[in-house]
Length: 254
Length: 325
Image (cartoon, rainbow over all chains, first blue to last red; front, side, top):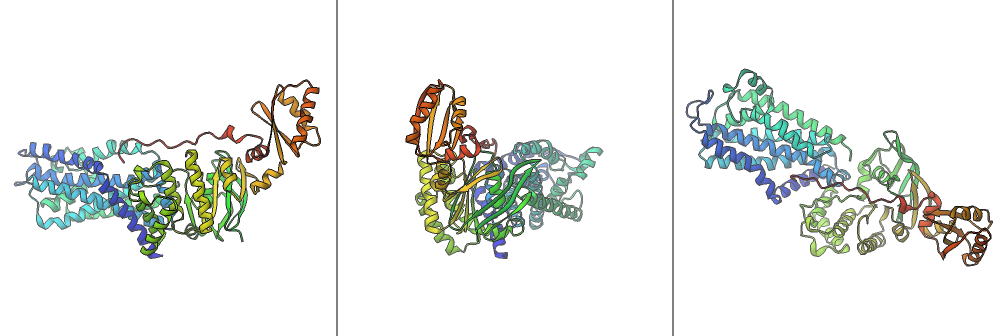
């Protein structure tokens, strides 16, 4: 019984990986946006000084962890939401009629989505290093831990949304109307300290802020909030979205 | 004991009864055809029998397991080929089968052997390592059929297995289905709105219309029920001639279709002159008349009062969404 459930988690994970490797166009599409921001915005605004940018941290250094966070959040959301395409193309029925629990399906999908999005985050990180971003080697492992949390949070959110959505077109609407503003308000592009007071309130209410701050804090050694607060908020948000995703998916009909 | 058993199985969607208290008994090793027009409740019935939908009323058992209380045991015993394709086209044919075999807990050795075996049976060994994306519609169907029985289910459900396929591919799929039933002894429950398909494949057929089962029997017996011969004719006043003929003691039934009549009788060759005489006496001109054996179409017509072709519109397919995938 247990081995069958583990097998189900494994095949769901493996499938995501295989698709990730095969559909190169999507990988490129996912990497292009953060890369352009890094190259043009980061290198273009390198000498700028903003309140909150401490001595020795260039704008490029500041921006790079934000772009890592952005690529992970977007890629994971997409991986979670891609259940809609499985429903649309009928593949979901094949999965749901198998003698495995829906929880295993959700877990496998979450691990698969998280894996591919972390790979993308690491690619952006490598590109940043090549562009000359100064990264703290000691922060790499805790940074990756924050990336994993970010991925789980976003896949869970994606699965929860997908279980409630019928139409794949709703997803691009959500990405453009909610996720893009949320990433701009997350301190990925400019420091909390340089925001107007009302924007700062929105930033504090924004889950992505804690993701960006956690990843940046570890990678370049500069937290705007605090590592423990970031961790606490992210752990609770992760639990909420993953539980919601699993619950809503297990109740969805085909 | 019947391998599929249902009593009073019912599904109500928003006040609309899609399946209305149906009873079913399918014996082990049988090919059972579920025949009816689109929207008759065939797919809803399959979804309930395969645990994808909860019945609103009644119960069903597969291999003795209750579909609501023991869904995992039911799922372990069945294979399903859905009406809409359900393959991952970014994976190869073999990978789709492997994915499935793992989900059903086959060991590595079983998987390797069994996947070779089913690929051979549906004639896809040469193309097994290509992405499903490059497969034709017929190849996809064959792959789905192979996938449906790779884990050796006791019962295989096929929902409109040849929908949208050309005639040659349809024949090929029929052969695979019959081969499978013969070689592996799998019980097959298939839905179709093609009369020819139900006739050719099924040991027994249930006719379903508007959520109700109207008749269950072998195709032969169903045809015998309406008489041994059918006389089809076209004439100037079909409804008046129909009324006249209905009063004759030797007429088993009269059905209207298009601009003509189907008359169910015994020893039809002797009745043709009689019919022509009755028409002439009443001043009705017959323009054509033929004698033939009854088909399931006639059976269907006699039970529902409608021709299946008048109702069978092409099924709606989901449009391919644009954008990323």
